Image 1: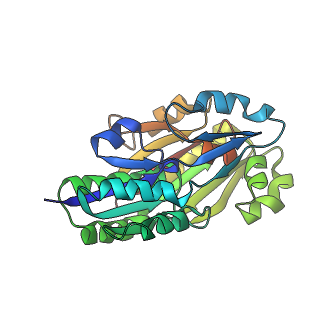
Image 2: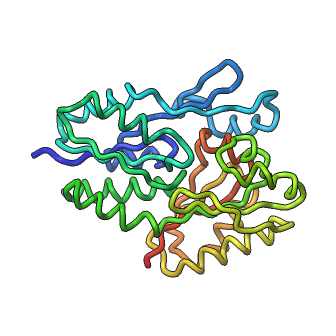
Length: 279
């Protein structure tokens, strides 16, 4: 019997072992450093190397979506075993990923492809992908998975401390970051991503206070279904893990280094959480 298969892009940060276990297909985005282009995939530029060198690049890295034919290739390969595909991608407000995923589907009429705007980034998107893949493994229909994702989307939050607003300002993806960067030279900005919007949610003078604020935000979400630590090699990652231990089972808490494609826009030393509220 054919089944539903799940596709996403590499900005979802789904851990490779989880993707393999749940049969999630990941289409890599690209990061451009100088004259070199790197696929955001295992075996490419390491994330540790990227974040260590990011402040020293003479020209800021840029990022791009994969060409539509890369999605077409994936859909065609999956059509052998699936009669429907659910593709969940980076927020349309931040990227053209949704459009290229749709264009790729137009070349594969033999399989029905549903493209979903997650409204999210990194593990905010990743949690939606994982939930969809778990449902597909259980044998749920595409219609059921799409309804689940629609209900889940407003319950997903990404909160993060940025070491500087400069990288977000350079990216041009967030309008308010261009106008406020000068105000925050000596302050740690905090952002929230929800329903496709990147919001300024606070400005604190110390990392210590920023960590306290992160924990407060997580606590305010109430009971949690899922929680991940996300970071760009932040020095206080373990401190945040300890602070959250009373709010979520440490055995279920995962930690991921944010993809270079997202990290190029947020910079090194970033630290945050991707949470799914249970209410």
